[in-house]
Image 1 (cartoon, rainbow, N blue to C red):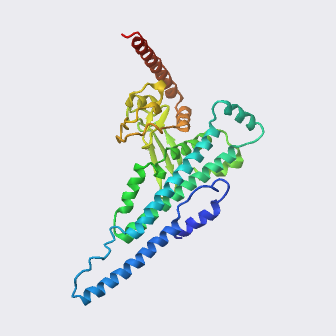
Image 2 (tube, helix red, strand yellow; image 1 turned 60 degrees about the vertical axis):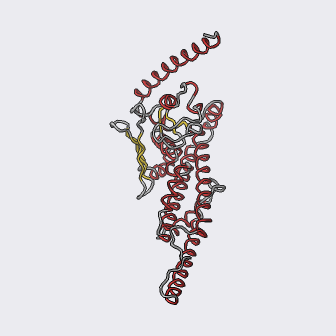
Image 3 (cartoon, rainbow, N blue to C red; image 1 turned 45 degrees about the horizontal axis):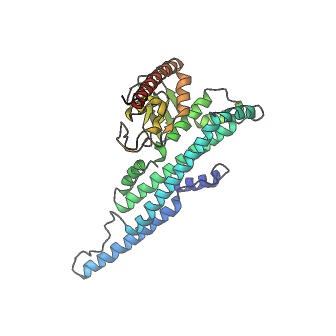
Length: 339
C-alpha cells in the first residue's frame, strides 16, 4: 500500500479529541503541486525540443533546468515550513501537558493524588502517549517522503537542504527533546505497576529500551520498522551518564551542572540564565540556552534504574551548589564594600 493511502487512513482514524486542533502535513495537496510541476515540465521540454528543431538546434534560454522551480518552491517550502513549525509546537505543548500530569509539582501534585483516589488516569495517559507518538511519526515520514518526491522530480538536493534548515530552525520532529521525554515516559510507566486493562498498550512500545549498564548508556526507540533511533545518554562534557539533564534548543543533552559551567553561570542560577551569546559546547550554536528543556522523565528514568549513581551525583551537585553559592555571596559582599 502506498504511503499516501496509509497517511489518508491515519488522518481519518486519528481525528479524535487528542488531535482535533493539531496541524498535519498536507501531503495530498503538496503531492498535487509536484504532479502539476512535472506535467508543466514535460510540456515545456516538449515545446523546447520542437523549437530547437525549427531553429536548428539552438537551446532556448527559458528552459527549466529543474534545479529549482520558482512556481513550485513559492508554495512548497513555505507551506512545509509553516506545517512543520505548527506540528512541532503542537507536539511539544501536548507532550509537556501530558508529562506535567505524570510528574506533577507543587500544589498540582496534591490535587493529582486526590484525583487518583477516584479515577484511574494511567490508561488515558498511555493512550494519549501512543496517539502523540503516532502523530509525530506519521508527519515526520510524510515530510521525508514529500521531500524525496521533490528531489526526484526536480533532480536537485533542495529537499536535503530543507531538512538541514529544519534542524537549524529546531523544527525537525524526530530530533525533538520531547520525543525523548515521551519515550522515557513510557519506560517509566512500564517499570511501574500497570493495570492489565492497559497491557495491550505496552505492545505499542515493546521496542523501547534503556540500558545504563554499558560503557555507553543508550535509550533505544524503534518507532517503526524503518525508523530506529538511539539516544546517547552520556554527557559530552563530563563523559558520564546524564544527571539532572537539560536539552538545549539544538537538541544536545547535558547535565545541568555541565551546561551551567559551559555557559559560565552558577548552578543555582539555572541553565536558562545563560547569556544570549553562550554557545552549545557541541555544535557551537548561539542562543540555545534560553529555551532549554528540563528532561524530567529522563531524569526519573535514570534515577529509577541507577539509584546509587543518581544519589552520588545528587550529593556532588549539592556540594558544588553550596561551594558556588559561597563564592557568589563572598564576591557580592566584597563588591558592596568596594574591595
